[in-house]
Length: 291
Image: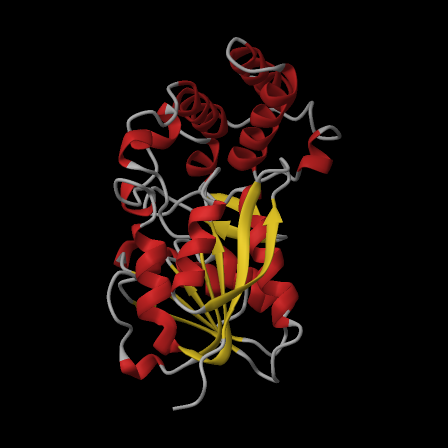
């Protein structure tokens, strides 16, 4: 049966409403209709009586069912927005979340006071969301995106190109648990949203996260803090004297992360909360003297 775009939307909204609230069901349906038809949300209402092609109707049915069985909407769409940037995402990278705006805000605010053409490293970058947000907001920043996952870096490179930032952003494979390679040089600021889910918490994650998002980017060891210890220690040599380290962390981890920073010679400058008023990020300075 041939259907209009409005009918595709209403059918999808009804299907989602069995499991989601009305607002979420409407959002999912609208996003998927726009995705399969190429329509913009603001024009969908005006074009609602237009007949959907058989290909669009089939794609819509497949997309709705992927979401209904638990696949995150972002992976079905193949893209997600973060800090005003449209980013490609797939199952090789975490989906950028609003919570991460807290650490992006801290890093961007500090970057405004860095020397001209500051060098910034986004370590454990995944899709590149934090580093690209900084490069987008700080016009003279030179940003390096680092991750151990080659697959994640493939996504990050696509996002660099897609946001026209190839002139100021580069990608390198690096292991946050090991000493940084000497060729990287030194940075004015390192920002990181490392894996911080504990071993116990990994077993309790929502199915949409546990079954679809990369465990490599989630698991932070038995206590969730292994990456904070390694980065605070090993990446000191990659900071310029007086350089800054900015971390995102999980709920309830703030005091432990700050203690790790203090134990490694950093001064805590600011702790920030996310949109849900949960403490989520910290900015610290490493006051090493020139050797």
